[in-house]
Image (cartoon, rainbow, N blue to C red; front, side, top):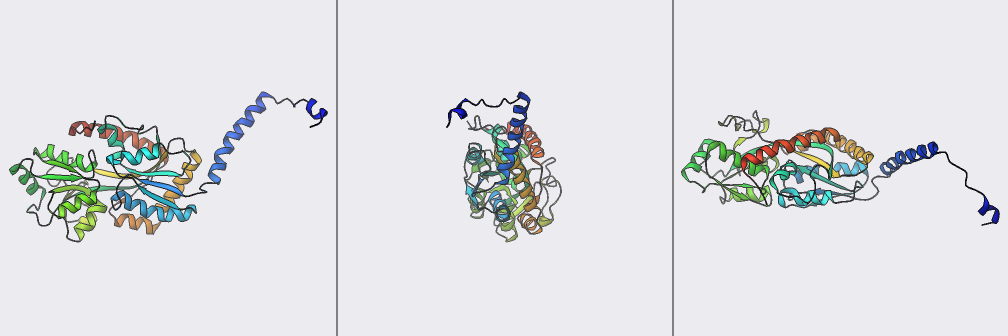
Length: 333
């Protein structure tokens, strides 16, 4: 460096120009991130066991999503604690778009069921889009004498605490549905939590537990194959693929309507343009006729949303399930 160079003063920059440059830089940075995204494989967390409803939807979606994004998507099944383990992984991952989590209604149920969570349900996970919705089906063994909900309730009344029902975990939608039936029918039944719905369904077929409210992807194929009997569905009207199965409302339980959903989330702080890119690509995939058909064949309805709509829906779900959990008296310390 010459003496002349050292002695030359830096040109003054007006404060207004500095501010304008800062704004331009802040605006340009996210655009660059989105344009280069993704440049490496993406981790897709599923907080439930392989073969369950969430896992089935995840595998249907990620196949085409990986093709569209031009990167591998690795499904990471992290079951346990009613979805808390998978949600924690996503909440604490770097907010760079390379970790996603496909969660269910339990994500918001957990906020009321657990005394303390290792993350903030709303603040630590950002919404991307809804992808699917579904109702539950009440299943029993075809060898069981119960051929209706009335039969099941009569059995429970004749054998207090001996009739047991399964679920995919403490605080799960399956447990809350069973607890609701207990309350409405005024019977005493025992809850048996499992690691996942497929494991509980296996024990129903083997006669080790009596019944379960389960997801359509788990229950529907087994019902159609004659390996399980469907006593009722939790929709307001009968479902076309189980047209002969009454609703819980028809079975004599007014207001017994239970619906679940699957939504895609990323760590809070993920750049908005990456969230928007993921949203657009996921919606494009879900709306493909072949993907839509596979999702519907699995027993789900296809539904999408903007990130903002899912955020509003999330807050409503928090309030809704807080009341249900309190009424059911379910609490995990």
